[in-house]
Image (cartoon, rainbow, N blue to C red; front, side, top):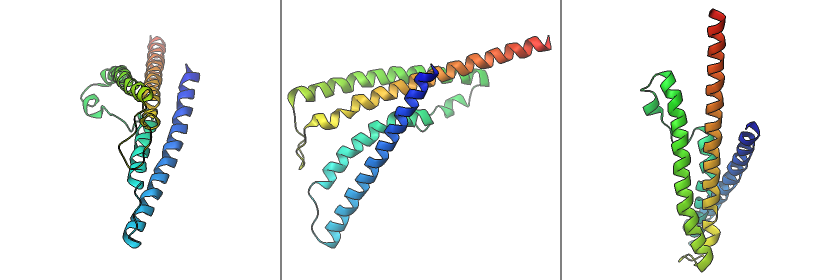
Length: 175
């Protein structure tokens, strides 16, 4: 299981690096467009479209890493209302619900992606790019999100088992 968790973490690092490069590219594209628009009175016709497409990639590449690092959905508001033991159980419940949510999202996005691959639609924008090239990241990022949630669940379960074993040893020592 440790190998699985490490593999997911490595993929998340790669996704983070790729998303960071895409953010940099998007910033460069937008800055050059602003400079051309206001300094040279010669705006590009493609910058906004390309930035929108990059934003889709950035979002879906960031889902798994955000979940892994705790920068995604948080339950602090709810879990702070419970005692420590209940909070530990709630973490596991949240991971299970996150996996279920991810599966539903994957099902929906995969269906849309398959449709655009079949019919070859183009985006109705200045940049006439086939939708499949933008949509293809959605199931990939969502699958990584699900795999990251499973890794988090595995880690929380192994931590829970280790803490229980430590408590049992402490109780035996006291007896």
